[in-house]
Image 1 (cartoon, helix red, strand yellow):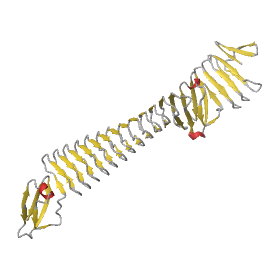
Image 2 (tube, helix red, strand yellow; image 1 turned 90 degrees about the vertical axis):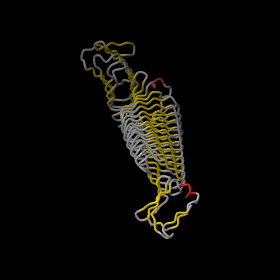
Image 3 (tube, one colour; image 1 turned 30 degrees about the vertical axis):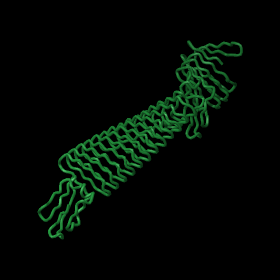
Image 4 (tube, one colour; image 1 turned 60 degrees about the horizontal axis):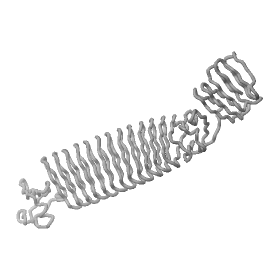
Length: 428
């Protein structure tokens, strides 16, 4: 087929609209319906001179629901205002979805895909592709290598299976699933749900109350600024919960877990787990601390003190503390730090076990039947009516027992001296 413009030397402007070619000459135009395949197969010959703005690789949609297919390299696709279907197989293609609920499929290398103002569905299989979801509740699937995926302003669903992919959730309550190797996942400004199955993955939760699940090997998980829930089943994983009151569940071998700022609840059922805590990290509770676990205080160089409370061990660091549930029954308790009894040791209202080696300390055991072992000099023990039945070993000539209620009786029992105060007593 041949289209002659004027005498064959006439000037024209041409553009592709969906699958048609429109040639404009002066004030008139000629539309070649469904001529795309003819141009592709070189069955269409144009005799004339194209103007400078003619670009047959620029594909325009209409106000109708269009179906646009392209295999051209370096093409630009701009869809219209209705629900369009775009299928791209060319490389270095730019796709802009426009309005409407659009369906976009692309398998071309280095494509750039921009979603529109409504709910779009984007399926990418090409490598080195950039996807920006735009507005609306979008569904994005990508299996391409080295893709970059940016969520939009609403609630998006992102499913990635490609490796070396970067995912940024954007705004909205997003659902992100990734099984790709070496993916980087950044949560957005709202409550996101992130599910990772890939190895060597980096996850940063962002803001909001996020739910993170990961089973990938060597993942790095960083919580956000609010209350996050983190569930890890992968080995050699690093977890830093960030701010907020976070809940962390771990079954992964050789994990490293930091609760971060705020009062965190950590549950562990695996071995060789390293828990890290620094001054200012709040009041954390760890269950499942076992003989293979280690609690590292401030990188291993900060000071701490311990007191047993029933079956628990309470580790105090500055103004905060870590409660190791059930750790008092362990044969070995691994804490990396500098042990130093505080000058003022205050127990709880329960049955405490207090060990003191510091000279000049003041020990106030409070309620419950407490056991106190002392090897320090010039130690002051305080007791009040109602503090239970306490036993103090290691009192010496420099020790002082201060009884708040002056009414007491004393009696010797073997080598012990028993002071009775109201309904309680202290045995030295």
